[in-house]
Every structure is written in C-alpha cells, then in structure tokens.
Image 1 (cartoon, rainbow, N blue to C red):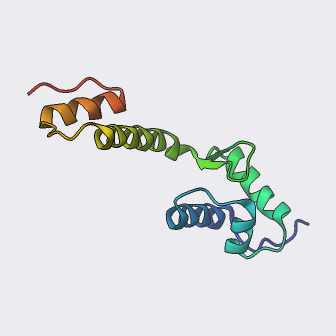
Image 2: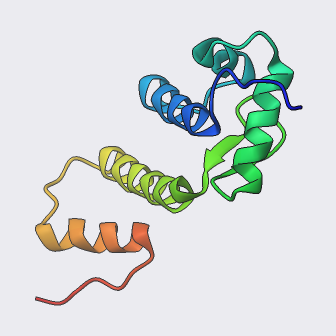
Amino acid sequence: MAPHRKVTADAVAKALRKLRAANGNQPTIAELRIEIGVGSTRTVLRYLKELEANGLIERWHGARGIRFKDESSTWNRMMKYEDMLCRIADAPARTFSFDDLRGMAAEALGIKPCSR
C-alpha cells in the first residue's frame, strides 16, 4: 500500500505559481519544500517528477530549474519587451513616435507590425 500523501500534485503546482509570483523567479527545491510543508527534498522531487510526467512543467539542471510549460512563451515575450524597453531607455534623449514604439514592439515579439 502506498503511503498517504500530505499534499497533492495540484497543491505543489499552486505553490510553484505562488512562489513565482511572490519572488519574481522560480523557487528552489528547499523553498518549495518549506512552502508545501513536507520534511524531505526527495518528496518535493517526486512531486516535481509527477508534474513533469503530466506535461505541466519542464525542468533542467540548476537551483531554479523549474518552469511551467505555459510560461515558456510568455516568459520569452516578456524578455523581448524588457529588451525593447532597455533600448528605449538607453537611446539618446528624444521623443519616440507611436509608430517607432509600435515597430520596436513588433520587432521584439518577432511579428510584422500592422499598418494603419
């Protein structure tokens, strides 16, 4: 008989999202262990393996190597926006037209700007 689980995989997923929102980056295994209230990092790793097997998250080596698959494209878009804003901030002092900004946003997103 399998041991009784203290939390569900869904609760772990909610904790991941909560910590991500609160800290601005993915939690470490230790942070997640404390958040869900289990005693072992091995238990956390089992839950993460289950979430990965169900296709909800992707993982890679590193302390914060966890990401929801639905965040991947959103994260990439956010990074492109950040790059665009940094270019605007680093540009010589001048006024950008709406068309300038629209073109930079389209470039950052990798799309063709719409014509007016």
